[in-house]
Length: 491
Image 1 (cartoon, rainbow, N blue to C red):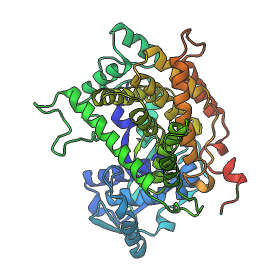
Image 2: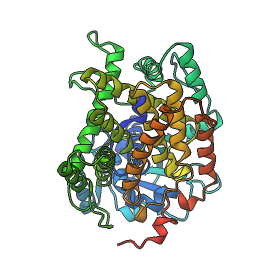
Image 3: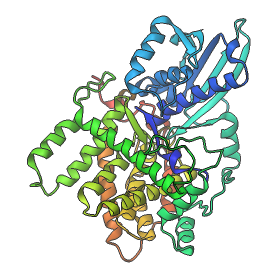
Image 4: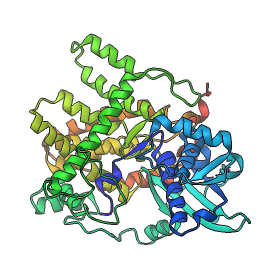
């Protein structure tokens, strides 16, 4: 196991984890490396090349904005979304970009940020990931100072070319030590049974072991502002992890509340109207007279989050931004519609997030969570699978039922394409989160009502999803060259 819960669930901004969060992190890492090597003061010009899906849908996904913010020294989890427009306007008006906020270089986007829409990969002779970025820096004489290729592989994760090659050549090598490693769902369930653990408790133990791992470049959010990123004498490691998970949940709740409260038209030119506010108002008016009101609320929660994401707001990647509404929608469903004491509710939420993360790790490490690589089955499909298994855990289901629910959820998302209209994370993405959340509840209920096992394993469906994604034409994988993106007139 190489992935932490806090890498799978991380705070960022919309509209896309692969096209916004990942490129911002790549640009930030590039200028930090320039600084660390002493080359930043010599840098007089930076050119960033975008390829594949980043080039084809980058403008709609905010990739250009993300690159500028990263070069300025902004990080996805720390940037203030309310200040982004003013910051970018200054750069674009002056054509001057201060790298890391202190080394000004000329920056005209047509010349310094080319979108190579006719080239899929940075090296046309080498098939790699379709989200490729090449960052170059030059001194005043035009001499090349640095040349770095990064891939945004989904969910905000990035790999340099050397890291990408190493992972491709030795994918089973783990650089982290945990007490209960797992590479498959079968191994996860068997290990948990051997040690008499729930999946949630197994992952909690692994996260405790990773708490001081220096290879983990993550920010665990804290409930208390004075908490450090490491355990204190008054806070056990387990409590530290649980507090950090609850802090992520608080960010999700804040995002949902903003999405429900906000009205208007989403940016990007499609003139898509926010609907979560109006739907919530209707539900508040009819009260509990509609027996399907809880399902409608789940749809509202999911859509509210993804409307915020589409507007470039603060979200939690779970496991991607395009699918960020599913996980919080089911957490809201659990807290609002499942009767329990406050203590049990909190414990259930922790089981939910830990178990969902364990399932997400399986997809991340054995398949893909990148829409540009495997279509939306790798985004909303994975989020649906994670949420279904997590809900079973929150409801005190067995480990076998968790595995079954996750399998059912993905089985009925297989083959789902990623064809956003205009390259914007709006249509069909916002509604699709609502559909995915409802489907996750259905999968959890089916699994918990079944007593005789099932024919298809989660491992088999993960392998099938990945192969299906590889077989899918690239036009249907976040390029906006087919499907709804081609057949619907943009207006």
